[in-house]
Image (tube, rainbow, N blue to C red; front, side, top):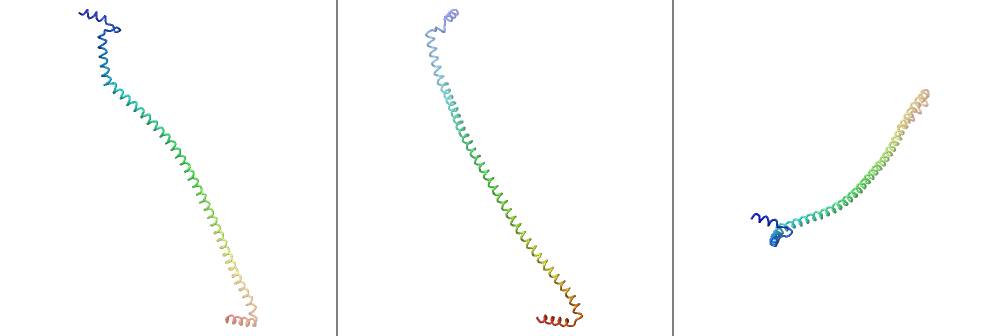
Length: 175
């Protein structure tokens, strides 16, 4: 029997299979294919489709994110340009305000200097007038003293002058 088995084995050729073997191999392969198709291919295909959808969704999300980044970049550039313009406007306003303040301060300083100059001139004029009045008073007093001394000298010897002075003094007292 073993010899027969060996002989039948030797006669087996995969290129030229027997009809029964071919039939059963086809039946087993068809059953295997159906089972694998139901149990393995559908989940594999579903997983591949899910993976494909996930990849496509990720690509779409990346494209949307890229567009949003592009929009945000352009928006950021616009905001930065506005900020630069605003900064320049504020700097210009600050410079104008500073120039105005300096100009006002100069004008006020000029006015104050003119006022001080006028006040100083007036004070100098008043002091000059007071000094002139004082000098005139002193000169008047000195002239009076000198005249008094001269008149005393002249009047001391002459009696007619003394009578005339008394008459004048009486007239002054009456007025």
